[in-house]
Image (cartoon, rainbow, N blue to C red; front, side, top):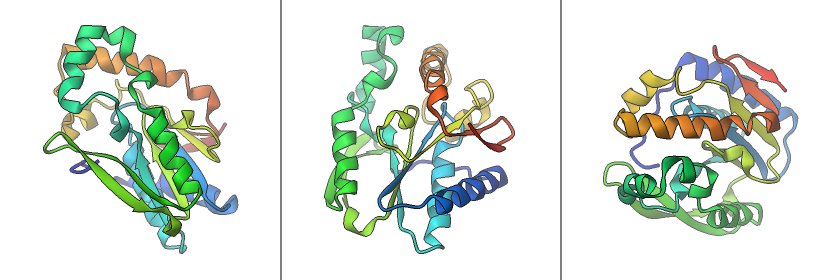
Length: 211
């Protein structure tokens, strides 16, 4: 996302280095790593650290942020959720999986690819074009990123929205009100369903352990 605020701390660096070693030990052509976790848990920060670390090894890795792929425009999403019921619509079904999978296939095939990119300042959706012939690895991050099929390494951050309130406020993506808390609770329920599919867990203190 354009205009996103990354709060990269020592814990992200340390966890990223551990996962980087796992990636290097199991490296393969057009490898995909996915990182899931709740809002404010550090998904984007971790993806950034891993991608930068891989660059030092001559590996071009590109983060792919699933939150760019909501089906409903950012300026319309709150009203749409309220009208349709938060419990009914918040979850993986909010995302344009056809476009996500098309962009991922274009990465695998080394093609030119165009996909959405949300500008958090204007709340408009831009189109970002990437030449995937120059990209060796994809690091997919988002609430439901580990749902993506054929991912080579699935990382799950165990912090819940209860532990990440400070990060959510600092990043300021959405105001912290009753509506937002209802959304976070529903996302919590949906994200936790993915936990059994993870290969690697990052705990409350950002320690890394294999499943």
